[in-house]
Image (cartoon, rainbow, N blue to C red; front, top):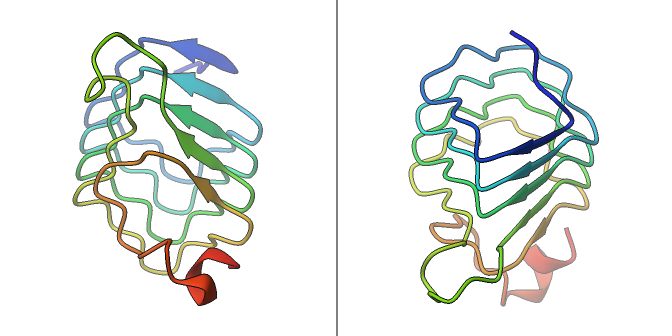
Amino acid sequence: MSILPGAVRQSFVGRDLRHRTLDGHSFKLCDFRGADLRGASLRGTRFAGCDLRDADLRDTDLSYAQFSYVMTHDPTYGRTDVTGVRWDGANLRGLTAERVIGWPYDLADPAVASG
């Protein structure tokens, strides 16, 4: 399966994307619910308004990735949702999260926010 570096409104629901290299890709309003991304390289990847609920990101390299939102007329739509994501062993160094739903860490804590 080919994944374009600038994917918009694509569905990856339940897909097996283990050990894929998607460094620097940009995903906007894409659906990754239940996707298996274990061991994938997602360095510098951008997720804007994506649904990652219950995705498996164990042992992924998310260094310098960005999780953010897409400005829409509805304040609840367009946010990246990471509710139920599995993060065990993931590299989150330099990761940015802005207006993300379901984030597992308290980004108001300076010790966590500084990475």
